[in-house]
Length: 115
Image (cartoon, rainbow, N blue to C red; front, side):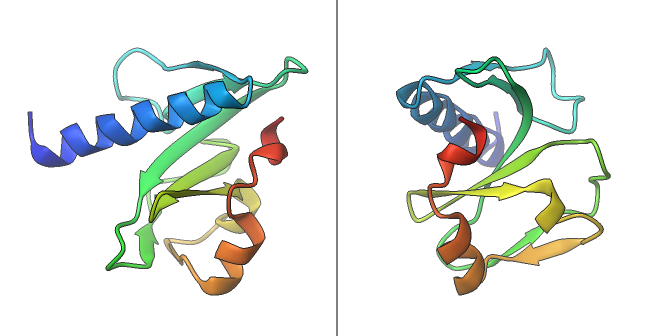
């Protein structure tokens, strides 16, 4: 298993752990052919498609060129041990996004957006 794949698995496990702390139920599709990593069920039984990504401390840009409307509802970006809960509308039509100070202020640990 490549280092990149292993790191991705670790980030997804961490996401599941954190989601569980908020009372969310997670399920992952079989294989890796879906444009999202998890289906998350909120306490109100709402289902969300979640894409989880890592941005290391040295980079602020995240490539998104392969995604289209309906692929996911929220993008969870882990950077410096903080999850940024970004609605799809923020990234729609963009081939990449910069994890800017404004974006960090607006979406840092905003788990309530899916609760």
